[in-house]
Length: 158
Image 1 (cartoon, rainbow, N blue to C red):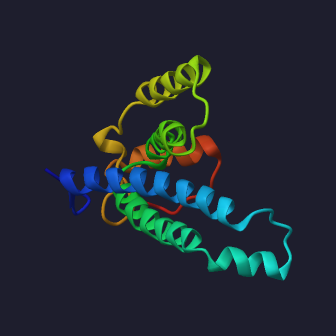
Image 2: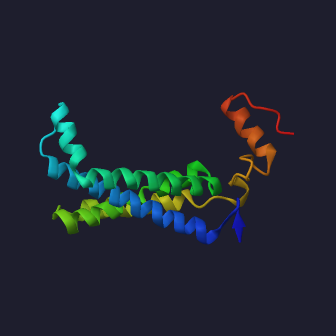
């Protein structure tokens, strides 16, 4: 099934890429920080940071995340998609334990369960909520209602 020009497989792949790159980006920034030592905002500190490959890997991850996010948002509403990105926090907790031997106890596990529960409670997009290729919803009445509720000036959608 295709949504907004993309197949479900493309959107699912974009989610996997977004979450993986989000985690890799933060891990890379941690390694960059460990490589550079104390950062004092001096020109030398910026030069040292710019010389570490970890920083450039993180920048590349941010660019990849941007592309994946654009595909996801073309299919999904922002209010449903953005909270799902919190899954990266859980991935980072496990990665930090494994890579950096950081502590992970019951409070963090409980917090992770709460994040997952929150994402599930927010639920997936309703098919009518996804934007069309033109960026407008199929149901113009829903947009009009939302604009009226928020007291946002809107263009005539007819």
